[in-house]
Image (cartoon, rainbow, N blue to C red):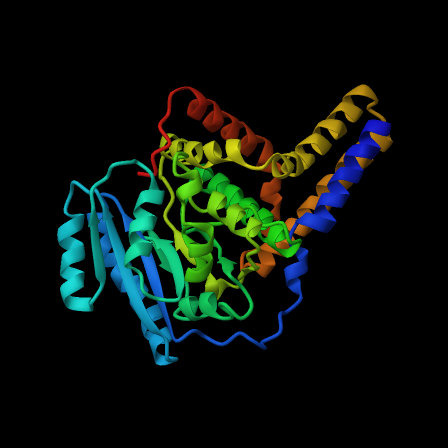
Length: 361
């Protein structure tokens, strides 16, 4: 009984404090003016087939921002590509005025490409995304820029999977949406730790203050998370944008093995997270373990009620977050699949710790 009660208490505390409900309160429009200029940095490695599509998808957002007085520079970094990426980017340099950086790949890390992009970027505010991402609305760039410098130094946006079919896609959606919920909740409670390089903005002043990626350049992964955590340590004000119009849709691997390799890279960064962050993130797992132990040790109606109440709270808060992010709230039922997602994460972690590379591409 005590085990179940303690497990329920942990889940209740987490659901009420860390599951992102605080952003339901609208923010004040004061200080949310757009900057005069910005840079959009996108890194590429062997992405020739995606270049033209990304250019078409980005164009409405560029036009919308420029119509509101924002001068936008697009910086594309060709990070050691061996296909036709260089030629495709050069064509856009001629036709659309993009800034193109060709960089030899000395390290299989996106940090190297990001630093090259930042060296070429001229805007006081930088938005980073990936070439396999699509802005969901023309307002995307303007929304990500609002309040820069005046209200925030770093803005964490969301990038959730685009359309797909099958159980692979269902689990990918669950994994992405739960990660987004955790990231938003941490920002709301003043403990940001998770950013998404597919949709993130920051001021050049903060990038310079942190020193770019220099302090964790030896870690292949974690280019967004580790930089964000360091920026917070330097006093960064962190905001988040969850509306659909501020999101990008991202392409995810179409095979289980491809997704596992992607997840291996993401999980590998957590080994260098601060101990306090790792301890906090472990609390829901501890709570679930206590609930399971309580039901097995004493399978009474009270233990089952505690376990059911914990699941209900987590499902309700997840559904509220999905609604806030413009996703169907009823899809919160997929939370029942979290044990399967947990096994997948464990597999990805084990492969990363034994055989798999954590190169970004």
